Length: 298
Image (cartoon, rainbow, N blue to C red; front, side):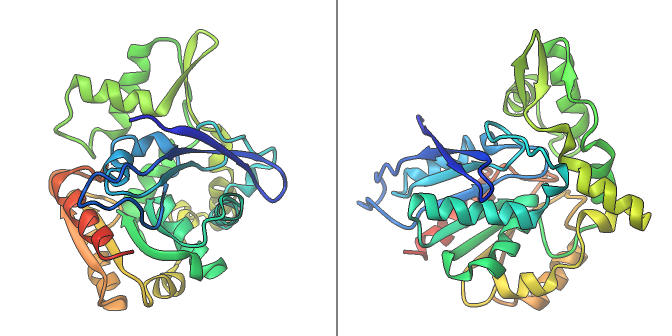
């Protein structure tokens, strides 16, 4: 499905990008609905939603798949310590202003979910409903330690085979059923061809705040995700919220899900079997739950 490139600027003038999918309006006669804003994880970009976005657009909704600053076609920040959810949430506020969007459904994968929690404290009236993809107000140290080990690491490879092998090595535990063709397609989402080689489509310095906090606290896991329960409780007040968990996720374990449900009893939960961190959201279980949520939101 085709999309257009949407550019806007941050508060300090940094050029930012999103893929803009127009609503198709082919299901149930619907031709419009609140737009959906999709926000990716730490080292990824808006291409993560290239399969999900057309499914949502086919239900009559505009979809914006954001490249968070420092990723994809969005500019790199000259001040790497700005790479944190507070800054990113401010960029989403700027996106809403630039597009005239007053309210939207938000889909947040991993870091994107944390950004959405922060956004709820900045501009709660803009959030109609939320999909939290394998993320919560607390995260398992097991998964956080794994993420901290590769974030900001190797970013350039001379051959495509090396790039694909890297993508497979870093993510194979999350997608054990993937074959060679799947990994080739996965790598095309996270790598760009540049100067005769292949580079990750993100600024290596996106991990600078994590490293700085870890150095100060000697605890990289807590630096990646401090306690965000107050923000989570605010996010889950008076709006539909769906948690999608990878069945073998090392970031959101069953005990965390139990505590999240205690804090937000109305939250819906769906688990995607055989997938870790994080589901692509087109898996049958995930998509059925997302479609149900969209059916309940104007």
